[in-house]
Amino acid sequence: MPQIIDGKKISAAIKEELKVKVEELKKQNIEITLAVIQVGNDPASCVYVRNKKKACEFIGIKSLSYELEETTTEEELIKLVEELNERDDVNGILVQLPLPKHIDEDKIIMTISPKKDVDGFHPMNVGALNIGQPGFVSCTPAGVIQLLKRSNIDIEGKECVVIGRSNIVGKPMGALLLKENGTVTICHSRTKDLKEVTKRADILVVAIGKPRFITKDYVKEGAVIIDVGMHRGEDNKLCGDVDYNDVADHVSAITPVPGGVGPMTIAMLMNNCVESINL
Ligand code: NAP
Image (tube, rainbow, N blue to C red; front, side, top):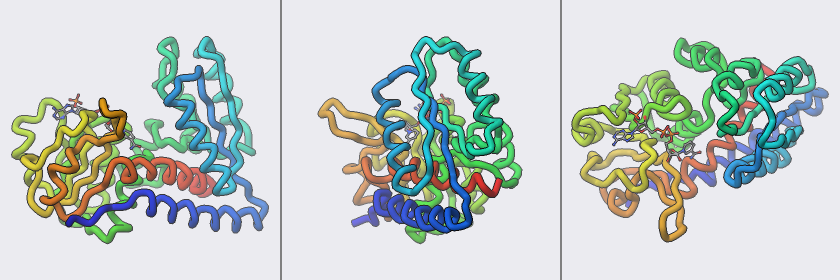
């Protein structure tokens, strides 16, 4: 039986630790405030935003909610972000993605002050990560590092293979594993002979966006599997990018879906909000 890496338990522990930190800060009259902006009412975004606000409430972070009409213009959104950038009582700004098609997401991300960019998407923070400077780190890959560390899985010197090179998962994941002294390979849709590369992995992080794509023929015996994928199957059940039942007996540790990487993203967002007072 593999070690099941329990993201629910680990994220709950992180949130408890943050709650204590926030209480300590309040005693010093320091309050943390996150501004959450949602444009339109995409059902998935509504769920994410609601969960983020709930996590803020649990930890003791104040959240300001901006629920804007789908028809909000790019200029109006930029103006709001600029106002929030200027406010001393706002520590973090989160613009829920995706935005409606008429708004340029990159332009909005660029408008958020790097010091308030708790999602870690601003090029200044992306650059900081890549040159080992302090800054906000994208929440999902930061959560993967916590899962590994808190499960006592060493990264140093390990062959780490990441499938996927998106700006929010694959690329920062590679940078973080490198920072932890892993030997990192990043695969993508043009990788030749994917199986040959993934079978070298001691730690395989899968963020390919295809349900149950990774079967045991992609995996070295005894590898650690981190499944970032999140899909709702035809049976209405959640599943990942990894075929869990096929690989489970073949590996030493694995994250389930749900209950693996998923809960870590919000925990690390909360961590970024608390860290914002030091950046
Ligand atoms: P994405 O932007 O769609 O990126 C997918 C990556 O996989 C791309 O780099 C793509 O390569 C690569 N790829 C696609 N087909 C491939 C193939 N056949 N062989 C090798 N590489 C292939 O996805 P993402 O935003 O990174 O998300 C990945 C998964 O994680 C999704 O299932 C998403 O739902 C999930 N996710 C979960 C969380 C969470 O909190 N748990 C957060 C974010 C994302 P190219 O670059 O060449 O196209």
